[in-house]
Image (cartoon, rainbow, N blue to C red):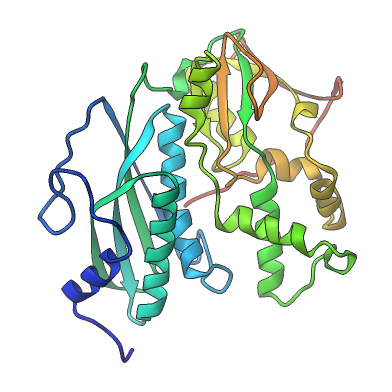
Length: 328
């Protein structure tokens, strides 16, 4: 590329998208130094081109946003409030400065939205695929961390956030990439399809969960974010906690537009809702369920670890083969 910069000039250029940090030592030294006021939780995740996104379907700003958002979701699923993050970027042989600045802009927009600070990172080159890795750090400002292994027999199972939209958005983006028009485009549904695309490109982590549940005096015994699909991620809680579950899917019934989209695409709507993944809703279990805005109660944990029953409107329901997202 004609406008390639040296490593340090490139770092300065990308850092210009972020406000100065308030930590003791931030970007520019060998390591960051933070002084948390509470116990911290740490997570890391990567987005790999061709596996987690396609540049043809994502604007660079979308890639930056998503790379940070998926990590903030993990922080929220532990009951913590996100505070800081580090960003590591491995570049293919060919890249464009404007494109990289777009990625930085997306990261900065997400960071601003959720009040988290960039405190360090790394840039390297020479790979075949672009990879963005983010490490996020949060503080546990009240109570203990929400873990996967805390569910108890009798706990209510709840979902905070919507399901199925990101999976439907992936279908729309793949059709866009292949030059198709999709089953609803000719019916004046362009705004709805745009919302599906946005659900896939710019997920919304539930960083509000600790405050929301605290305000309702609701204490999760276990929690996990829905990255790989509702049933697959709920299964992680059940196995870690050695309990089973009885589910009633009607509580997860989505709006008519999503169901219409699924049927027009020859897909069972429930496959999108319970197996689609990447919505970054939260699954929680608690022995003191309460009415909380956005939470739907979908079943209960049972003591028999090998029991997993699914009903729809009170009748036994069997899904088609359910698949969750696989990262490797």
